[in-house]
Length: 330
Image (tube, rainbow, N blue to C red; front, side, top):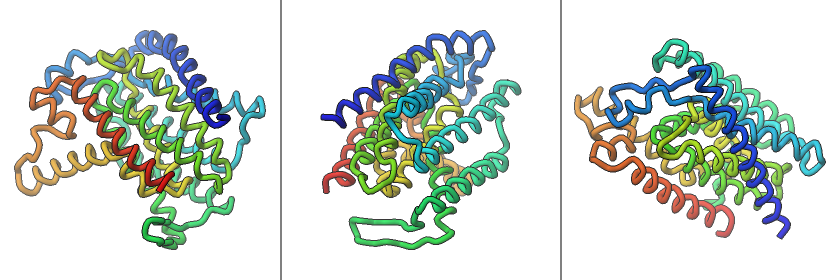
C-alpha cells in the first residue's frame, strides 16, 4: 500500500505543478513569439498550426525537477548517483533541445543545430554518463535474462550508452508530429519503466528512479491538457529530446535495455518508417509510404488526426503491458 501511496502522490505532484506552470508559460511563449514554423510539405491540415507556441517541454521538465528537489529537501528521497545521472541526462538533453528550438525560431525555419554539433554534444553527455556510472560500481555488461546471457562490453559499453541515448531521443523526436501523440506514448513508456523500477530492489536508488518516472507521468498528463487536439502548445525538441534521453537512461540503469524496444515500440516503428522511406527514395527512387513517419502515412490515407493518436496510444499500451509482464512477472 505504501508503494501505491507514493506512486499516487508523485503523479499528483507532477500533474498539479504542470497545470500551474502551463497556465503561466503558454501566454509567455506567445508574448515572446516562440511559435512553431510548420513546413508546407506536411500537408494543408497542419498549416493552420503554424505559429502555435513551441518549447512546451518546460511544462513537464520544470515540475519534474522541482518535485524531485522538494522531496529531497524534505527528506523523502535521497540524491544518489543513479538519480544524479538521470537528472543530468534529462536536463542536458532538454538544454540541447532548447538551443535547437531557439535557433529554429530565430532563423524562422526548421534549421536548428547542425547534426555534427548535436552528435558531439550527445557524445559528451554519454561520456559523463559512463564515467559516473562506472565510478559508482556500475557494470559494463549487457544482460539478457531470458537467454541467461551476460555480455561483457568493457569500454564499448560507453558506445552502447551513446547509441541508446541518440537513438531513443531521435525516435521520440520523430514521433512528435501529431497533437498529443508523443506525450501520450511517453506517459505509457514512463509508467511501464516506473513499475519495472519498483521491482529492481537490487539497484541503488531504485525507489528514486520509480518516483521520477511517476512524477514525470503526472507532469505529462498535465502537459496533455494543453497539448491534445487542438494543441495550445507543442513540446518542441526541448521536450522530446529530454524525454528520449531520460527513457534510455532508465532502461540502462534498471538493466532493461532490450525492453526499451518493446516499451517504446511505436517510437521504433515510427523511426523505422522514416529510415525505410529515405532508403527507398535514395536507392530505388520509390516511396514505400505515402509520407513518413508512419503517422503522416495514415493522414494521407484520410484518417482523422485524433483517430491516429488513439490507435497509436492503444498499440503503445499493449506493447508496454507485454514488457511489464516480462520484466516484472515472468
